[in-house]
Amino acid sequence: MKKRFFLLAILTLTGAIFSACEKDDICPEGSGTTPYLHIGFFDITDQDVPKSVTRLRAVGLGQNITVGTFSDRTSQNEITLPLKNYENATSFYLINDSADDANGVETGDVDLVEFNYQTNEVFISRGCGYAVNYILNQVVNDPEGVDSSQWIRALEVVKSSVQPQDTLHVKIYH
Image (cartoon, rainbow, N blue to C red; front, side, top):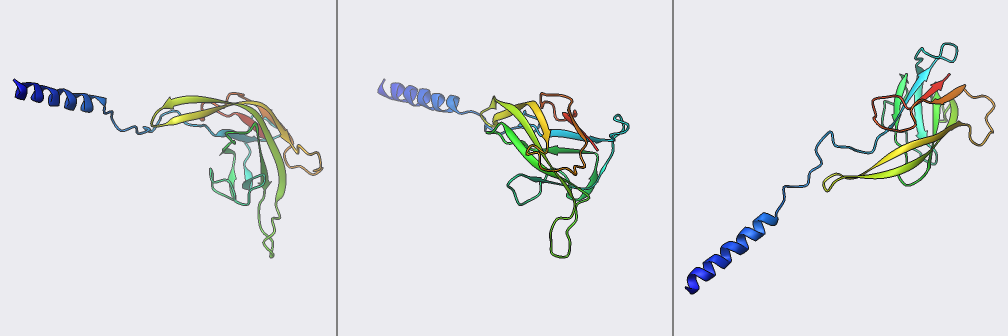
């Protein structure tokens, strides 16, 4: 009788342990993640026509490295940029015709663009954690008002919700 009780107790304990185990919490590809801001560049004279920016470079304000979401110093008519998760604004230097002079100093046409937004954290799963969704409030070229020779002529928020990534959120006219 004691052997049966002992065997039953072990089987019950073993079953309880294995039933508490879960599959590995791996974040599958295609799960919701924090989106990038999708920007398109357009001709100021014909605003429906995409217009590439020659040798485009993007550098975050206060950063000393270029943004890695597109090839640096290539002609682009669309790019994606990461926004800061725990702030309500992110600024980038967008550089048209980027190049270095003999001393390694940037010689391109530099504009500072500031993106103002609200954030909302969304729980995806235990494996993926949280994603941050953004709602664009405003996009400002030259927020400090000191640059009189801007290559960016106008900005337009096309879709304020930065979701999904495959649609344009902001149009930049030059």
